[in-house]
Length: 471
Image (tube, rainbow, N blue to C red; front, top):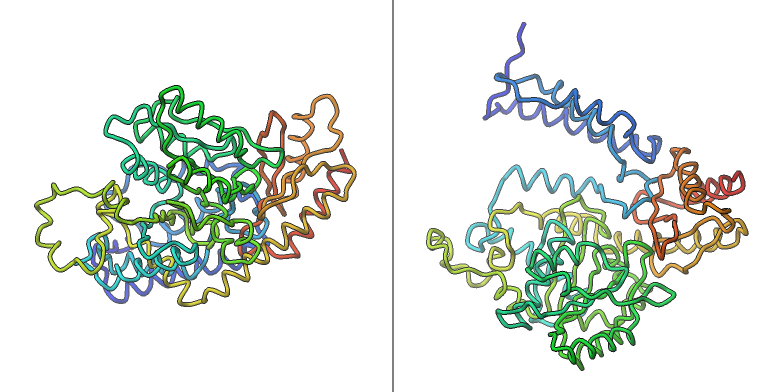
């Protein structure tokens, strides 16, 4: 008997049946994360992808077949949701945020204009106000939820350009650390700046932006007729989690009339902790801040944000008056902001619920406690690896990333450390990544998953020590 295709408008019984199947699938997936490979199942991923791909059928397939294809795709991918994933910057995976995404898509409300869904716009406004208050920004501050740090950095640079430069802005100069995220230079290029418009400032031995070198560079560029206008500082670099000296950088920006943007995409939510607030001293003086809730708040990918000290400047840089077809929806929306005026996007999903619902359900303390635990675990990793004579641990972590390498790798140091990484990851209990710093191959342990606890970190340390000894 040929199965009946699910119509575009399923019956109540069909909705509940396929919904229950999807829920069971996700619950089983999460329940099995502790025992699955820390790297995921990437070995035959391309082969599986080729079997799943293809044009859609003319008539529908049974949901269990479609769900099975989805499951095979999920199994053949990196596993950022598990406790052993210590590579790159771990992703989120909060179940409550997944429910929020389902609810938001299910009711499908339009939230980018204030008049279309005022209560949901209020939720996003409250989330953004909480972010602003967390960083001590004034009442003039506001922001926008984005797809991630890359879009946030782009909007920040466009806002700074509009606020500090004339229409002919090609002599404008942006200053970034040599450890800045690649999205900053990409954003500058998309915003219209030539390559010469992004100056990479040297870093100290601790990989923090060198403020004296920054001051010299700004002075030299002014003398050469260029137009310095923006500094991008880091509150946790992707490579090592280094935090730039934000207070002295803010002092310099005030003296020189420069816009201070802080890229806190990875590290920003450590502001919830006492140690984070101490290390981010001066961040409250920023003109704009990039945050990624899909990192430090453990939310699904695609949940970023930009905060701007003066929200009116963000609006000035993004608003447009040419949409007469929206005139019926603008009236009555003056109490709440229309987010379409603060972002490149007009149509966008209701991202705010993915932040608002978990905060309401779990409370702020749950996130603070999880982040405190990650700082504790990173300190433990640093302490124990630094005590092993076979390992070199060049930098004390500012946040939750620990960088290390073999202390005596021999003549082929890159090859030896690459083999070291491969042996560690072959355990399938932990998955680490690497980077290059000053021409040296560096291994990284990035502790950020809310599912990573002391037991897996102890296991990770033992695996690293064992493989170092074996080499």
